[in-house]
Image (tube, rainbow over all chains, first blue to last red; front, side):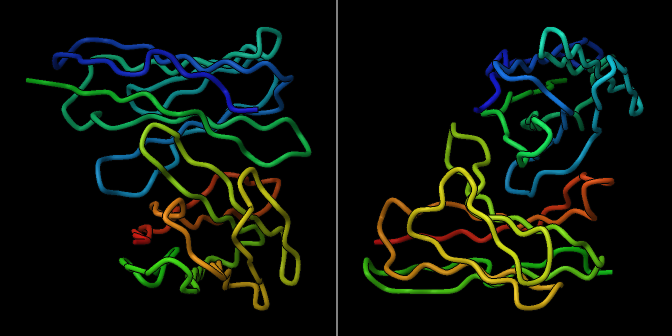
Length: 109
Length: 113
């Protein structure tokens, strides 16, 4: 079942922070995060495994709450290069990754 | 390393025609995937493979067939194209279940008229 992402779209000014949420109605084994720039292929950002871990990647970090079946992606001090569509993908263990519909992030000067 | 490559980059088909999309990876990955991406729908899995000679259905397999005769190649076939198959198709690969991050090819834009 497809995870639900929120918000669908967000506009930020450079330097502002954003949070993108991903929730599932099924128990999760892991959550992946990818970013896709316009006209390009999705690029892997990070993966979080069950255990409530938090990961960071430059000024982009994420958390995973397996009890709530949710993950959040945190973008701090956003840069123009952060613009793109962010997808979460969820795995239930023995099933392949299912992607959400994406969150379009636009960072303006 | 070329990573994941896809052929062709663009294609226009008439309804009822057939075609094959080729995906190749040079990273020795076990797992390979075919997705379609439509506006507002995200990435939807068509078929996938967990090793040479194996294939499995994803979320939206109808109207497509796949083959994985060689580890490095994953072919997606459309036997009788329909306008509903107009989409951008992405191939991806991952090492295996222990390293599941996926690497995507550049995509194929297919239009069926």
